Image (cartoon, rainbow, N blue to C red; front, side, top):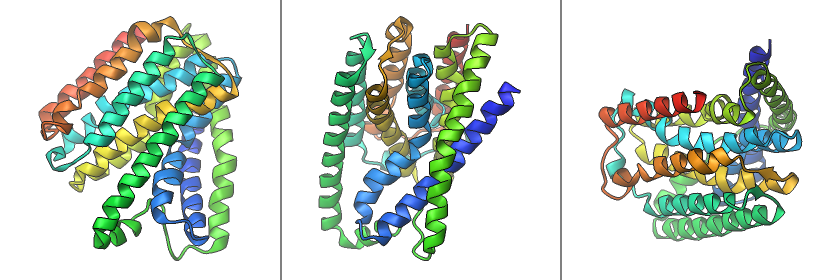
Length: 317
C-alpha cells in the first residue's frame, strides 16, 4: 500500500506542478508581466515546485536525508539519466548549442553547495547565501537574455510566444482552476510521497538518505526526462541541455535555500564522502559537449545511462 501511495503522491505532484505553471504563466502574462521575466522566474520555479515541496516537507518532518538526497540525487539523475536515455533514442546535436555561460554558473553553484555542505548543516545563514547566489544568477541571466533579444528583435517575438504553458486564449476561470489545483495538489502530493517513502525506508531498514537519492530523486526527475526526450526527438538539443543545466542550478540554490530557511538540514557524512562528488563528477562529464562542441551520440547515451545504473547499485548496496 505504501508503494502505491508513493506512486500516487508522485503523480499528484507532477500534475499539480504542471497545473501551477500553466496557471501562473497565463495569470502573469494577462496582468502585463513580460514573457522574459515569466520564463526566467515563474516557469523555472514552477517546474521545481515538486522538489521544493518534498524538501520542505522532509525538513519539517525530521527526515533531512530525503530533503538533501532528493536534490543531490536529482542533479546526478538529470545529467546521467535525463541526457543518457534520450541520446539512446536519437543523437543530441549539442555541438550546435552555446551553453557555456549557464554551464559555468551550474559548476559554480555546485562548488558553492559542496563547500557549504562541509559546514555540516544547511541553516538560515547558508540558506541566505544560496538564495543570494540564485538572485545574482537570475539577474545575470535576465540582463544577458534582454541584451540578446534586443539585438535580435525578430527572434525575441518568436521566443516570447513560446513561453512554457502560455495560452493567449485561456479564459480567466481556467487560469484560476489551474492555480487552485496546483496550490492544493502540491502539498497533498508531497505529504503522500514523503510520509510513505519514510515508512518504506523504515520497513526495509533503508536510510531516508538512500530513499531520497533513489526513489524520490528519480521520481522528481521524470518531468525533465519527458521534456528532454521530446526535445531530442525534435532535434532541439539546446532545449534539452538548457533544461538540465537550469534545473540543476535551481535544485541546488532555490530548493535547499528555501528548505533550510524553514528548518535546519544536517548533512549526512556519506554525502561528503561520496554522493556530492558523484554529482560534481557527473557535471564535469558535460565539458566535451559544452566546450568541445561534441554531440551526445547513442554511444555516449549508453555510457551515461550505465554510469547511472552503477551509481544506483553502489547506493543501494
